[in-house]
Image (cartoon, rainbow, N blue to C red):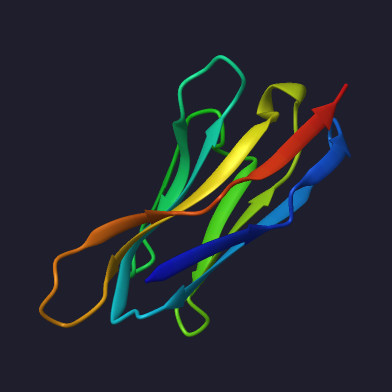
Length: 121
């Protein structure tokens, strides 16, 4: 099995910064896509940022210029540096990864349990 464990969430004042981490463990041959999603109360889960194994990144418009996604392939870890945080960034942040457990297996998507980010005004 594959597990994704997020860390780094918390309470921060508007304008502050947080760095989220998500480490993958278990039987893993390779990881393709890794991403961060968030879900605020009463809203649908949305993609915040993603990064491929080659390092190509994609950001939601709301994250551009403020958030930065990166990954350490050797550590099987993805990071989300969040700067200039706003109250509207308050949500549960989920890590996702597309994993191949053997060289012949298809990609399967796994999710972390989520970490709460709360930005106070």
